[in-house]
Length: 150
Image (tube, rainbow, N blue to C red):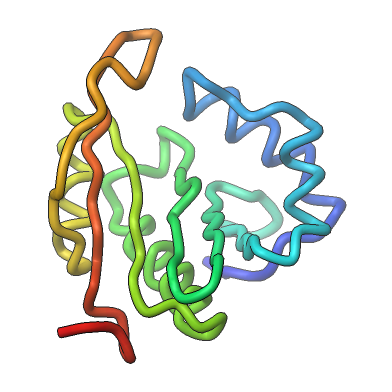
C-alpha cells in the first residue's frame, strides 16, 4: 500500500470512488478543482497500481476541514482509513492548521470511531443534512492539532 499526492491521471479513479462510496458524489468539475486549489490537499491510497481510497483536506488560515475520506468497500475493515486520515492531518498541520473539523453521517459508527480515535470530539449536529438516506450530520472538532489550543 502506498499513499501519494493526487495527480491528473487519478481523476477517473476518484470518479469511481465517489460513485461507490458516497450518495452525494462530487461532480467531475469539483474533482478537477482539487488539482488547482490552493486550499485543498488530496492524497490517494494505492494497492499496487489500483487506487482504493483517497483523502481531501482543506485548510483556510489556521482551521482545516476534512472534506472527504473513503476506501472502496471491499478494502474496508483493514485499518487503511486510519493511515489516510493521519496523512490528511499531517497535511493540515503542515499548512498551518491549529484546529480541524469534519461532518459525518451520525449513524456511520466505523467512521465515528475512527475520528474519535484521532482526537475529534462531537460538538453538534445538523438535522437532516444528508439525503439518500436522510440523516443528521454529526459535527466533530479536533482543537489539539500541534500548535492548537489545549
